Length: 138
Ligand code: 5GP
Ligand code: ZN
Image (cartoon, rainbow, N blue to C red; front, top):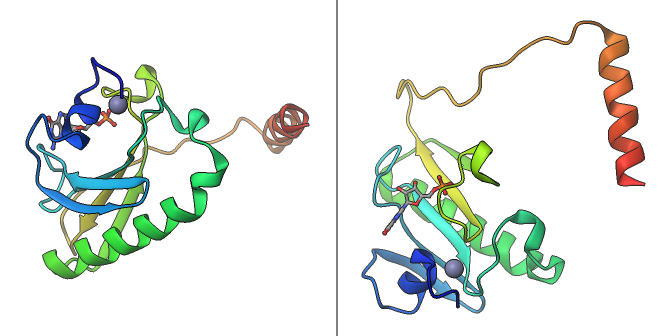
């Protein structure tokens, strides 16, 4: 529990929320400002700041929760698609520093566009970058 974390306060029941899932180490609730209605946030009960702080052991439980909540959000809203997104660090739009996965139900013609895509200067530039990533992975 981080004292200055709004999501820790929600999980602890100190701030009300529209809870949708509470099993084991995972908690989920509806986002107060939804991209589309039913937009849910899936979080670890334990405070971790970003994706990179989440313990790999949480993976199985987390994936099960994402699938369960995602499926249920689609069913409850009549959505025919679902986006999952995660903002890590402020430059990527992370406002709440308690790692969380956004599940956004999608409807035909809802007009939401998530990514603006670009081109590489050349295939060589792309291959060099791939090499740099492989090197960083080690
Ligand atoms: P971020 O930009 O950090 O990825 O997303 C934070 C999300 O938390 C936002 O979509 C915002 O609407 C949501 N949020 C912030 N404060 C509260 C709150 O008090 N209750 C709920 N339910 N959602 C919140
Ligand atoms: Zn927290």
